[in-house]
Length: 253
Image (cartoon, rainbow, N blue to C red; front, side, top):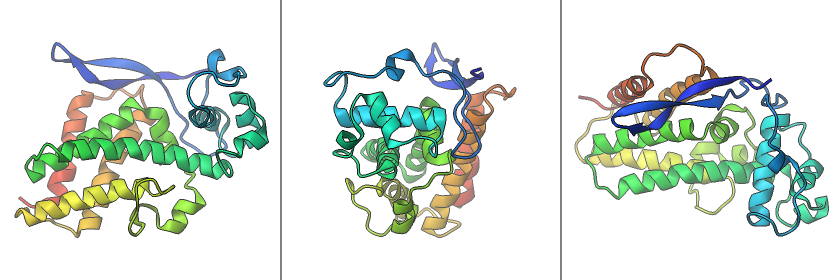
């Protein structure tokens, strides 16, 4: 049975935040599947040429299987069957299952990088810019709980990303598989360097401060995703409060 709870919708209508139902995601191992049925439109075998490009179809099918059946239980053949192609045909797009997972992670981090880039173009004061980036991170997680869970909470970091150094990979390049997370992290580090150059004192080194910001905000997002039916107080106040806590923790007055 699908377990449904509620998350705070980041949109406002007439100044009042709205609450939307979401499916609770698993919080255990990679072999655990998300409860609930897969929609018939995606579960059925697709004909060639339908919908999005083949690569996008593969990513969508893999994401659904990883979430509903678990990463370990998902095979290339299952992904190919869902897309409607043969397993050899799928290998024309991805070398293996891990390459698909890396592409999904890069896709999620890519959304975050784009949002941070957009905020950077607004030329805001350093403190406000950092806060806006933190808010964008939280809102992204609540808007995309499945993608967030798969990237940050499923406990399945691809071997290639680990070998590259994870979020601390040296000289990450956009478009290089497995490095988009490091690019997002370096964006935050750069914001902190810019803040320091503008006269804002940091309580920690740049990378440590960036990790502390992420840890605090990730804890908030994970709690709201994993426990949507918990009687939280006002969600927007929780978000604003956590942004206060983490920014004041790394930036000196």
